[in-house]
Image 1 (tube, rainbow, N blue to C red):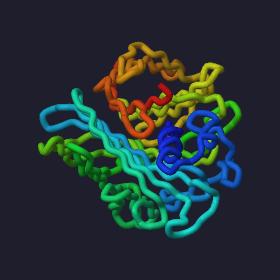
Image 2 (image 1 turned 120 degrees about the vertical axis):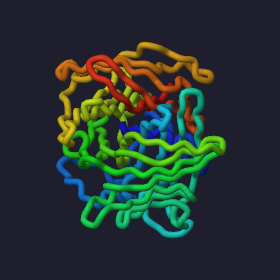
Image 3 (image 1 turned 30 degrees about the vertical axis):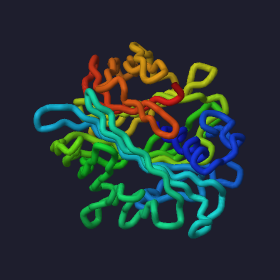
Image 4 (image 1 turned 90 degrees about the horizontal axis):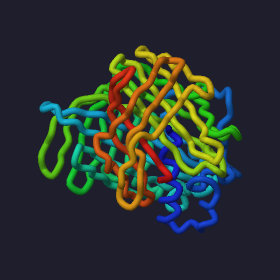
Length: 357
């Protein structure tokens, strides 16, 4: 939602570098632990571009997160994920091997009968991974998201995307047909009743073209993509146990961002209705209603893979269906992330992420 990725980063980092278990014992993936020494989001802060496309090392965690709904020339549906996470092990800035930043990348291709994924880990300070705001570049090893804007355009107006993994690779070009969208209150996105929050903005208007390589076969594809950018230091409450996050491209050209963070009180929900020309309308508390409709056995757990999503004040009432029930990210810390379609009061495609199952 993108509090998404939080689980993945902190637990994976802890595992990879042997952070004591106590450091990840509070809240979901330790994200309810205190942010002592780190900066925390405040309301009323104006986001600045292109600077905020780059890293914020004074905050504990952030990510650059792209999901794409794609179709081949023959009409076959695919989903693609590309994610770069940054986590700070300490609230300090040093260079070289003393740099406290840890980086992680996730990449995946999802088809109706396949889900291929890869994961990378890197330490900061040695050039193996990082992000530069201008000219924009985000990378980990040979995976890269690179800005290709026209002069005077936003650095993320046009980007190339590349990743490889066992049995797959992709090279895509993304061009924005609408503006950046600030989530929450002008980019200040509240995540709990205790007012934990993050800074959060999106680019949900990407048009995509490029190619996928699956088991040595090249497939030309086109479609739509959604970028989420988020950073924080203590974004969740101690009793929040996971989330469902939806990014929806409506056939009308409108977009919907919606999430539920599960807790012992029924969950904290948030939604943003985005017009076809990019105007966001954050919806008031209680606007979003989500209900699981079908559960699948995914590995050794039951996962709700089909949902009813309602926003009554907008007359929005849809049923979502996954392209592949088994879009399971079997990474250091596993989660479900995959392309979905939906129909009802509106039709379209999007992505769903679920953690804590």
